[in-house]
Every structure is written in C-alpha cells, then in structure tokens.
Image 1 (tube, rainbow, N blue to C red):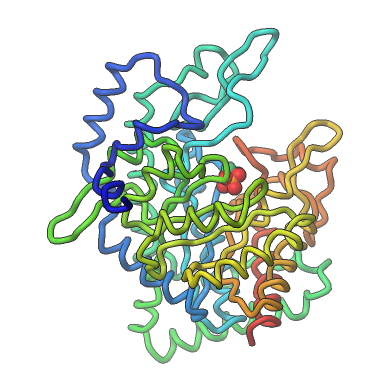
Image 2: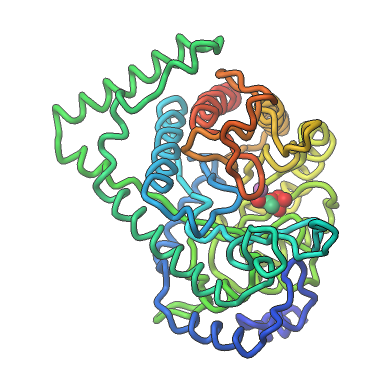
Length: 452
Ligand code: PEP
Ligand code: CO
C-alpha cells in the first residue's frame, strides 16, 4: 500500500489534496504562465549543498554539533538591500561565534532568508474601513498595503520572489566567501547594552577571548584565517506557497529523488501539517532536510505518523523537529513527545522555537514578545531534554541584525512604551541585534549546563 502511495508522488501531486493557507489566484492562465516560467529558471541552490546540510544535521542528531536557525518572520521584497543582508549575516555569525566559543562544538547556521516570503494567517480576510479585504500573506502572495487592490493574490509575485531570493543569495554567498573577516573583530561587537546584565563580566571576558583567538590565528597562520572566512551559511523558508516550491522542485543528474532547489532546508508550518493535506503530500517527496513545527494543538500520535510519512527510511539529518509550545505548555507537552519519539527510534534533530508560543498584544494592540518568556521556554526546553536524557540540538529564532523595537525586555530594558520607536516587522516581532546576542550567550549557558 505504502509503495503505491509513494509511486504516485510528483512535485504537483499535492494539487489533489486539500490546500490550506493558499488563496486561489483569480487569473489561472497567468498562474500557469508564471509557473512554467519559474520551472525553467536556474536553481538557487544545488543538490550537493542540500546533502551537505543534511549530513551536518545528522551530526546534530548524534549530539555532536548545534543548529542555529533564524531570521525575519517575513522578508519583504522592498527590503532586499545591502544593509539588511549584511546586518542579518553579521548577527547570525556573531551569535554562532558566541555559541562555538562557549560550547566548543560546531554550529551550523541556517537563515530564514532568501525566500521567507509566504505567511500563514489566522483569518483569510481583514476588515478595513468597513470593507473586507484579503489578509496580507507575505510578499510572495500579495502586498502589505491595506487596500483591496494591493491585497489581491498576484502570481507575478512568484517570479519576483525568485528574483529577490536570487539577489539575496548572491550577496550572501559573496559575503560568506570573503568579506566577513572584520565581523570577528572586537570593534564590531557592541558591549554596552550588556552592562545591565548580571553576566556582564562573563560576556566581556568571552568577547575578549574570541578577539584574542582571532588575533592569534591571524598572526600565526594567515591561510587558516582565509579558510575561516568561508562561513558556511544555509537558507531556509516555510514552503507554504506550494506553487513557488513545486516549480523549483527538480531531479538532478545521477541522483535519485527530487530536490527543492529554492532553499537548502524548508519547513512545514504548525497550521499546514495535516496528514492528508497538500503540504504534507508535497513534503514527503523531497530530499531536503525538513523542519516540522510542533506545538498546540497537536497529538503525539499524529506527530509520529507525520514523521514516519516524511521520513519512512529513518534517515538521520532529515527531520528537524521544531517545538513551539509556549512557556506555559512546554512542561506538559514536550516530555511525552520526547519519550514517544525515542521509543520509535526516530533520529530527529530537536530544536526549540521559543518565539511562536509566546506572542501577545499590548493594551495598545501592538503584537510583541517578552525576552524573559522567550528565555523561559528555552530554559524549560533544555531542562526537559536534560531530564529525559535527550539532546536539544538547535534553536529557531525570529530575529534581525537591526535595532528594531519589537520584543520587550532584555538587558537594554526595552518596555512597552518604547515599542513604537522602530517597529518594522511585517508579521511577528523579532529580537533586535542586542537581544539576539544576549540570547545566544544565555543559550550557550543553558547548553553547557546540560551537556558539559
Ligand atoms: C513562523 O515560523 O513564522 C510560523 C508561522 O510559525 P508556526 O508555523 O510555528 O506558527
Ligand atoms: Co513568525
């Protein structure tokens, strides 16, 4: 039975299933045209990069390294700019240096970048001045501006998204290849914000030690530093708009199976993981590593069946299980899941998304998250894994390299009244540059307590 099901898979077999979170495009001819054009464009990533990431994730599942996945909640086409990309890479690299330095294991960096353009929404429509208009679903589908016209799903945006992803990736590759030596240097590390943190001295000592290590290597072995400059960095997005992902899902010479060549890793969102739905049908046929978001509402049983469906051969490095329970639910919900997965012998990478279960609105209806709640979920996650004898091998964060004011708390003490200063996000609130560095430092502390 399983075999017949597998054999009927194709990059478009999802169309036979119920598709959630994807609006219908009113111009189906244009959609067909855009789809065919996208199918013919060159791939953004290669199958060997995808396989390399999968091999690294297999190491994570064996407890030998750590996964840092993060970036915007929703990227915007208009913000495909040099400073945004530089700042994002800078903060991810600095966070990874903190983790590597403190934990002493390799850290694999995966950005929510170069394709994170499609969003699931709670409501299909939104009422603006008495008029029902489509909700904003990310730049890959419609425009943010709150007018009826801007919000109409437009399939030309599939092509625009591909181009924007390509431009982003091109610059990321160039930076990661050569241009990032200076980001390891101390002048690039902002420190003052940590003055209010009880761990300031430790943080200062760590930055100092990273600096010395860099200087030392530069003085003894310039070629080693050259090698170090090649920061490997992978891309990921939620494969939500299946037209975009399916058009870029292809076979490659001398390899079996289909690869989604739009990103190294793609993930399945918490709202589109129904076993008989279109998204699971799509995901079960691709070779890429797959992130699976798990949080309320879910059952252990359906999660086991989902993993079995997506990874029937139990390949290590294939599934990254990203828990997003919320600080108040994790204690009840994570332990039984860990036990059940261990019992089945599934080799998953366990990752924690402490963002999506901890969103709330202020009295002024500003969507935010509290740094302390985020940290609390991270701490609980480590404590639970430690108690269960399991390895928490990654985190999944919404963050930016810019000085935005979207999440409250952290050492610099942003409060609700300060949220208006620089609130930029198109979707969920992100950690800013300083909050991200601080969290990396605190994550490393938790990891060390658990696994050293
Ligand atoms: C997201 O990662 O932006 C997201 C929508 O997450 P989730 O599917 O976990 O709600
Ligand atoms: Co989000």
